[in-house]
Amino acid sequence: QVQLVESGGGLVQPGGSLRLSCVASGSIFSIYTMGWYRQAPGKQREMVATITSGGSTTYADSVKGRFTISRDNAKNTVDLQMNNLKSEDTAVYYCNADLGVLATTRGYWGKGTLVTVSS
Image 1: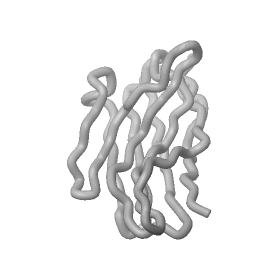
Image 2: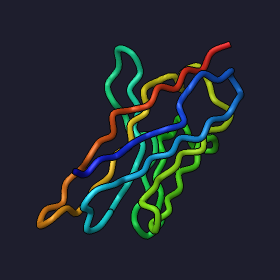
Image 3: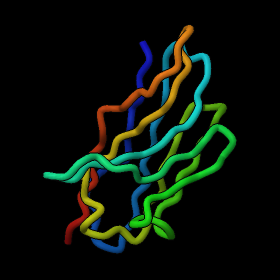
Image 4: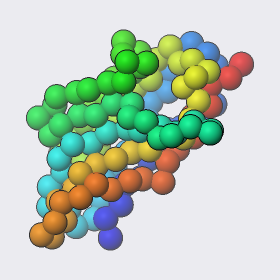
């Protein structure tokens, strides 16, 4: 069974840092773009950062200069280093990956990890 599992969420004070990790497991033939999304209470899910298999990255304007996405293709992992966190970064963070499984390629989601930025 293919799954994405996130870890690293928690409570942090404004200005602090957290590192989120996500690992893809199961009968995966290939992994394409991976990314992090978030959903704050009462808001729609939004893209935070994505990274292609070749290492090209995109970021939401709100996190540029503060967040860094990286991946380890050998370990099937994608990380999100979050620095200078703000209260508006509070959300459930979801890992997403386009995975080749058997004869199909589609997007998969993790169950999410909660990040709370509060003093």
